[in-house]
Image (cartoon, rainbow, N blue to C red; front, side):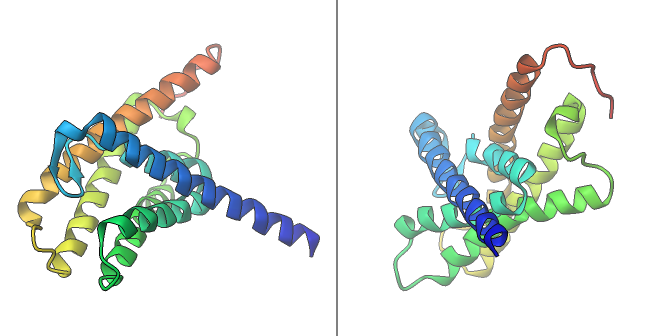
Length: 190
């Protein structure tokens, strides 16, 4: 019983830490790229998209659940109390979409479990898939809930571009840092 309680505490700490870091990156992105906002919820450079991928690749489900909780916290400030369903589902889409994409890519053998073993080309492909899935799922949700300023056919592109640019900046930066930490490792091919 002690081991399962320890595991639960560890997993909860990972979820809460992920949520905190996601909110922090969201605020940082808003501060740095405030001049690149396309519309509410869409920025031409969205660093948290890369952080979504990193959390899911490194932590798996606890990272995804942290993204859900972090999104709920962010959305609690953006939406009124009487519209709880859209922020609730938005949080689920934000956190679970990258996790489901990761699981799908792993199942198809297109994604290795460690980011350090990925080539730059594979990282680019993965980032584009994650960015497209996130943009499409968010825009579909907003369209289904008839969000007043949502136009799925137009807004999906800036969201995709913002997610892709933000994710590429984060992931290539992360990979660059990891490569510098272990400079003598042999280059792995995909």
